[in-house]
Length: 172
Image (cartoon, rainbow, N blue to C red; front, side):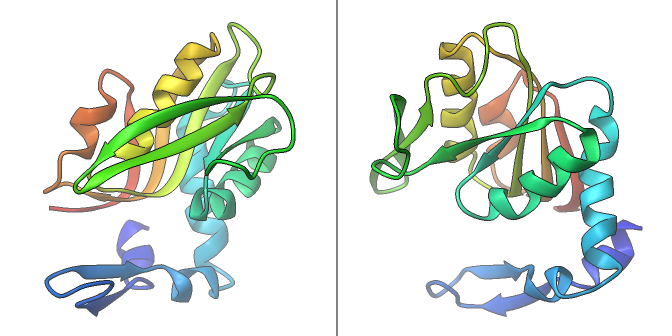
């Protein structure tokens, strides 16, 4: 299955800057068999194990909502600052050149709630690690993280450790 899904992802060289090979998921999203297969594969290891899916802005929303539906649970959102209308908790994290910040509603995850983090891509792990920290600060139990794609040659998995990582497609 992952070979089928991998075939629906195209490489865009030198995007968004020279030297980067961007993994474009839009052909997969546009495929009537690929999208449901991707969602099913991302959800499968977490059936019956979680209460909430946590989708990370912005492509984590694309997969987070259908994964939540597949698991029969709710969806919580992690967004950039100023996008959530109620009380929020913030987490600032390091980027290669500078910092960024994420927010979550303070009531998005109940204490002890079992959570799976969902995003399209695990690369350097900074965004995912910040989301992990937000779940922890809210008292949630992060059961795992599910990604459509993992760039195994980058340190993302180590940044979210000890959270178990499930990736449907891995590029080494």
